[in-house]
Image 1: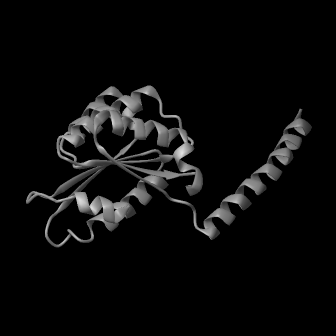
Image 2 (image 1 turned 90 degrees about the vertical axis):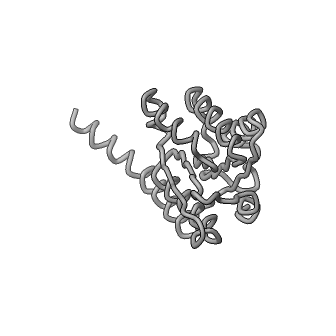
Image 3 (image 1 turned 120 degrees about the horizontal axis):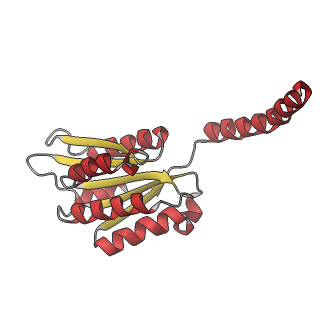
Length: 178
């Protein structure tokens, strides 16, 4: 995917503007890593401007308008979300408007998913939504799934296991207080 995006990106003399909308901090960090990979061939010749917006912030009209103004300058819109997320209507609307603006720069919409398996990503609600937005906006669409590394997955599973066993203990303690 990285090479395909790099092939369509031809940073103008003023540089390239990338806007990232993310659902959680870890998603924003992974999207930043993607930007670093994409920028590698161009860094010496053209500056890159990165803007990051939390999807939670885009629920507020004033912030959504400010982010939309930035999107009007964006060449690349990256949406980094959990693949199982059903995007709420205000967020879908903002992404749709932003994607149309990106099209005017001959840019692209890039979806970066987490929380799903790579083999099933096209069945995820977020993928279907973002692909539909890209098609309706006539903008190029790229996607990737970021799966946790083995150690991270094991840590996550261990955390879930510990929390599952901690909850009955907490419940028992509360019942004894009554």
